Length: 188
Image 1 (cartoon, rainbow, N blue to C red):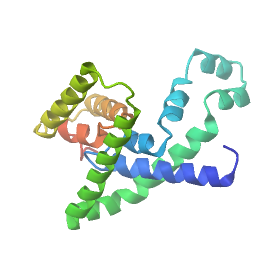
Image 2 (cartoon, rainbow, N blue to C red):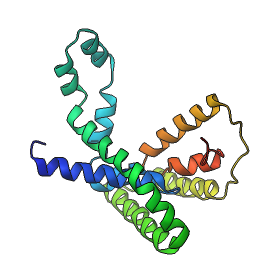
Image 3 (cartoon, helix red, strand yellow):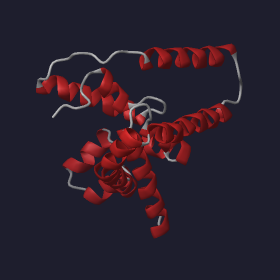
Image 4 (cartoon, rainbow, N blue to C red):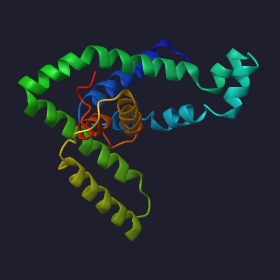
């Protein structure tokens, strides 16, 4: 990734992920998967390891930057942040004024991601089919869950955020929806 065009495209993919993360029911991980950056994102996150700590402690910042795929992460995270900060109000407006069109758009993204994932499966065995059915059942049960009444202390809010951020990276699991279930969608 050396061309400006590649970084602009990656930034836009980050914006798409951020927009998806704002909407309950849609995952930024799903967008990363659809746009073809999911594996590089996971590898970049995994690179924050013992070697990265050693490079940091030795002051080898350039080597650390290379090791953690810094250009990729900063560009992607910048797009996510810009999107969350700018699109949150637009998404909120669309949810209030055009919910059917917005949910239809995101439902289409979910359907496409399911098709893309199914194409990756080379051997359809009973275990794969069972896992797919179990995932659908769990997703259905989660969507019917009633938001919980939970504590408003900062430790619980922090834990809720940690759970949600983990969910946001997984395709098909919405961090925003997890926050709704935990009763933390409007916490300050």
